[in-house]
Amino acid sequence: MPHEAIPEIHAAQSLDDLQAVKTKYVGKSGSVTRELGALGKLPPEERKARGAEINAVRQEIQAALDEREATLKRAALDAKLAGEAIDVTLPGLPLPAGGLHPINRVYDDLTAIYERMGYTVVEGPEIEDEHHNFEALNVPWFHPARDLQDTFWLEDGRLLRTHTSPMQVRYMVDHEPALKIVARGKVYRYEATDATHEAMFHQLEGLVVGDHISMADLKGTIAEMARGLYGATAKVRFQPSYYPFTEPGADFAVYWDNPRGESKWLELGGCGMVHPNVFRAVDDLREAAGKERVYEGKTGFAFGLGPERIAMLKYRIPDIRYFYANDPRVIGQFRGEL
Ligand code: FA5
Image 1 (cartoon, protein in one colour):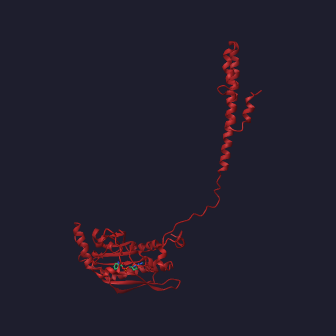
Image 2 (spheres, protein in one colour):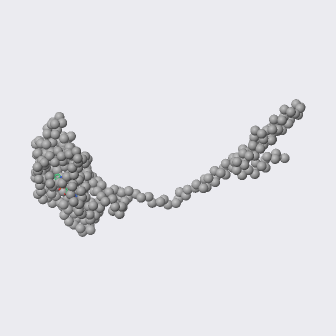
């Protein structure tokens, strides 16, 4: 006959039930424990046999308790796992993916073209001083050319750079010729906005300095960029223009011949041969910084263009203000395309 505790153990439906049964029989004041405690009152000749009997019962109960406990725990784990089951074969939920801003794509295209031609890509400060933005570029304070680029002035006398050309000066002060760089970044002008003009926009500046650099090198470089952007049939056009930091200066346009048949001349930017006064101003700054004068007598060309113009045509964006209005309907069209 199994002990009366055994059916109670099998009937326990939870770990709490099981604990109650355990306490009742083999706990500190359980019935079996008490029987063991009473052994001392028996005559010595009965004590041994009775002791062995009660111990056997206690072991039987303990074994049944252990087994039931394991069974109940396994059932609890199975129930928990069943509740948390994940169907890994279900299709995933679509997550909103980011994308590259159209200006960054155009920058990436342009810098890839110039890196292929061996240029170094640099960036510099958007907050500039008057000297780097104007004076060192041959635009003294009284020069009417200052009116060409209306300026956001800061209270401390510094300004938001109106073009990337101050990077020409910064790079030459820090590096000796020969050099080939493109500088990319934001520029700011205090002017009314319209479909083709923003108060904040971007520029890509190019500068090449060495010995015997000529206008032919400049034209070849701009033509190579046009072919990189628009394919082998791209054409470029140069028209005389005026920039105080170049002599001579020119504006350039690229003939844009796309498969949709929207061919047209795209006015892209300004360029020219670096004015000797710029080299002189750079040498002055170098001298003041304890460096050698190495630029006078050198030759070089520079150019500056607006990537917004390229992006507007490439992605058929009719108004420059869409780029920076943070309208998800515009930016969302470039999602996922990297
Ligand atoms: C300059 O800023 C000269 N620093 C470019 C240069 C560099 C000439 C080196 C010679 C040698 P300009 O102000 O024309 O030039 O601007 C150059 C280009 O920036 C323009 O052709 C146009 O593509 C773009 N741009 C100018 N103003 C705006 C504007 N408000 N919004 C958008 N793009 C503009």
